[in-house]
Image (cartoon, rainbow, N blue to C red):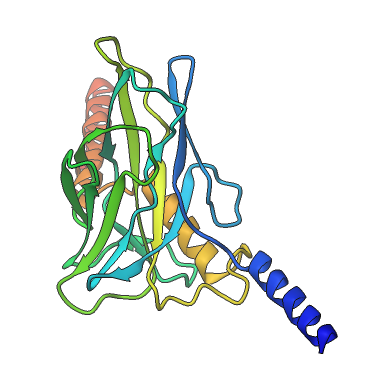
Length: 246
């Protein structure tokens, strides 16, 4: 009997150590004049600018209080805020590029210190945030909302923390910090931390899309017109007639 209990205890400890635990956020620090933030929970790919958390059902909403940037060691003599630099992105972990969240799905980012709130959906590319204390990675409350059926998977976005000393100049802002959130019914894989697991593929896809945005079709059109103009100008300079236009 004692041997059975002992073996069971060993098995439980082994399972606990093997299971991924997702939480907290980015550890904020000051390196000279540069604001630095390092993820304390990235999913198996050693990317310190990528963070992962699990959404939990709370009062009928899918929420997380993990994913902010802060440190109690940072001090109080500063004035900080944040901005979001991507749309809300989605991946189902199938290995395809991440896409903007479908219409009707959005992420509400609220300050737990009553500083403000913003909503990010799949249509925007930049959203101005609000003041943050920079003292806690639990400062934000993230709520994923959907007007219809919510596609299971991983959702995420990129933001930067900026600001400076109270009454002083500005620090250099952080790198793009990418937060990702897994829905409760998403299957992360038998080994979620493996590079080819659905979870790792999803977070990597969102990170790539958030930090390397694809230009809008209108942007491509403008770039094409610009290239055409340069081509025409060069042909005219050479006094060579255009056969078919640009």
